[in-house]
Length: 91
Image (cartoon, rainbow, N blue to C red; front, side, top):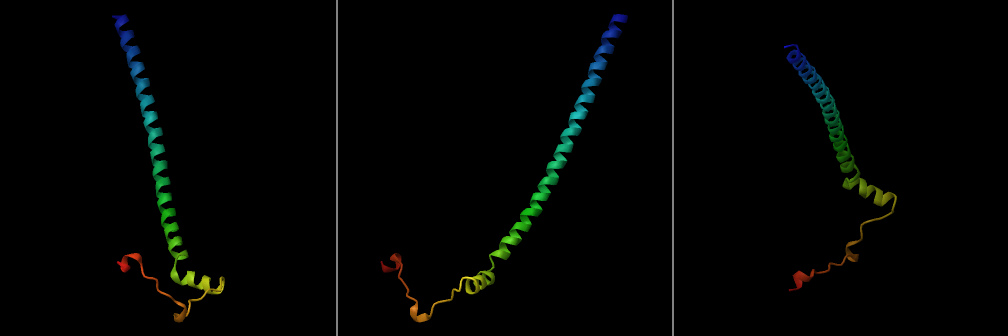
């Protein structure tokens, strides 16, 4: 009887250690999951900011302003514009 109790007690200790170990691992994995979720939220915010910045940099008025002021570009006169027919229109 004593031998059976010792065996059962050893099994109980082993199961308890396994339970504690699995709970610890589950907590670590949950913490990792939360960190990755936070990182994903940060990346979504950064993506939104970058899209806003891209739309600001690509605004037609800004590009036209830079072209006229910095590069000294201007639209050509109508008499200097030549329309070239596309090969599909010639058929």
